[in-house]
Image (cartoon, rainbow, N blue to C red; front, side, top):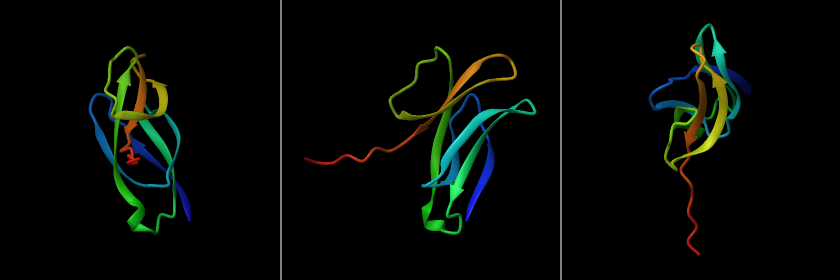
Amino acid sequence: MNVVYKYPVKLYEEFTLALNTDSDFLKVDIQDGKPVLWVQNFNIQNPEKIKNRRFKCFYTGEPFGDKWNLYIGTFTSYNGYVFHLYEAVELEHNNL
């Protein structure tokens, strides 16, 4: 079964969401003056695929580290600032 969920987004601090590893990010935007993220979750009955995933928003011009390596989306906040949402994804390293 597939389901679309809406999650609140924190603007100035890292936050964690428990999401399926197969989730698709649909949109990040402002709703009722607050930032939210819409996510399509696949196979929600399989708890083994649920993982805590780390996210953080950065405003335009703000430097950020390499660990924030998956771009999710851009949105304009209620006060006119433009934010960019990223996820910190652990990369698998293959030993060659």
